[in-house]
Image 1 (cartoon, rainbow, N blue to C red):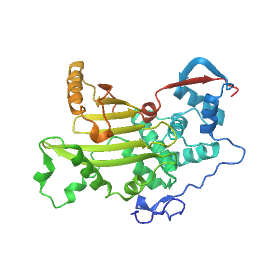
Image 2: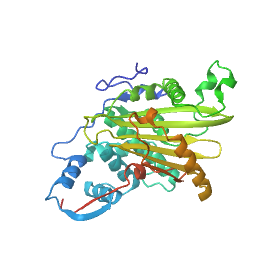
Image 3: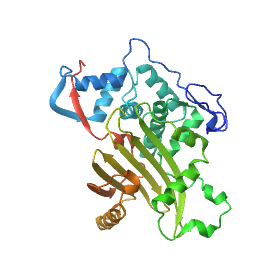
Length: 340
């Protein structure tokens, strides 16, 4: 069931002014003839034995994207890097005309292309990431819908709606004595997802190459403490292009005094967990959190199905506003000659 005013991909809808669900339509930007998309060009350059790739030499991925942006005629700023990072991550062909349109739309919402603070950078990356996710799903978001959807890629804050407070349940039933089990979390997330028309609609749509981004925001109270949670799940189904069996679970949790970002990743047969806490904790506290995490994550079958244990569980200090570009593209890539 789609929200009011939202048409399926391929059927443009009428943009509304107040409800972000009134503004999802099929992208209108097409690849101009004679202009090669960045993703296929970059991929073929990396694979070709005559590509000019320096044997055994790698450079940070972001450095390569800065050079790519300059070669496309765009500023070497945070916005250009974010768009190229996410386009590669989703295997989305990004030609100059499309990149120009995305930049214009994101900057029109008030973001700075070269943010001065980490919080501003995270907000910019959240909108860029949201734009590429929507594009990968075959839809275009209006400025209102983009701002609304991008909110779920930042840390949740106090303004995040506590929908359960509007219900008829007794308040004592919402306050739990222990952390909810996996089934409780599933019910909570699905209930609150259905209250958001844009989110529920976008969660139904897979990406073009078989990957599927699902986003679930919810709130929960444990021992009188309120926690706001943004859960994002990225799956790649077997047989789809890219890495088979690849999946990510990225969760942001915000409490009154601390925030956490949790990465649970399955690549092939390997399971990795990366947990970050803010504000920074002492080494002794991190060691205690490490033991707690190992205990909680000892059974991940509810998350990943087939499970043989985590190959690595890392607990460390993080940032108040972590970077999506850094998290989703941390590796180095082969160095390519300027002539490519």
